[in-house]
Length: 211
Ligand code: URA
Image 1 (cartoon, rainbow, N blue to C red):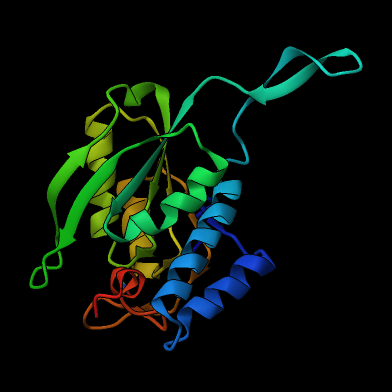
Image 2: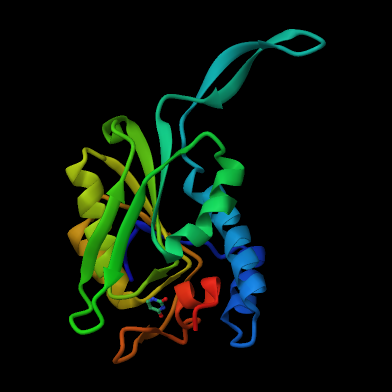
């Protein structure tokens, strides 16, 4: 996995929460809360290099030049439906971010991503877009979502997931070498049904209690 664009967030809090999420008996409520919490922690990492500028402010004691985030506005782009699980946690740290919804489902026969909804802010060219989906499995959905964002002008895209399979990282990095990836862990492989092993099962079903 010699890809300098892949960041594994090995913070103990992230790793602990991820292990709780993997447990098969974790409740829907618990799974959802943990995904939100990890979303917040990953948001911290994915925004680590945002540029700062010094602006004049006044504290109650004295004027000073204080650092504030400069320039680009942020857009959060969850891939429906599981990507929504990251949203509240990310918004807790980036409350002014715009949101782009990307509706893709995985065709169970071909495993290809099929678009059914796309709604994003107009001005993606001038925005940092944080694309998110908990599971980077085959990479089909992530690649298709990145293509849709690029077609609408996005040039600064970062991809955040919870778990990645080596196959998904290879595919995504090949098709979108310009997009760095943040993940909490890289698992062993995909199984014959394109589920991540050992993984945590179907993230959408576990989050929404649909199984
Ligand atoms: N999507 C999931 O929700 N889980 C997997 O293991 C793979 C894709």
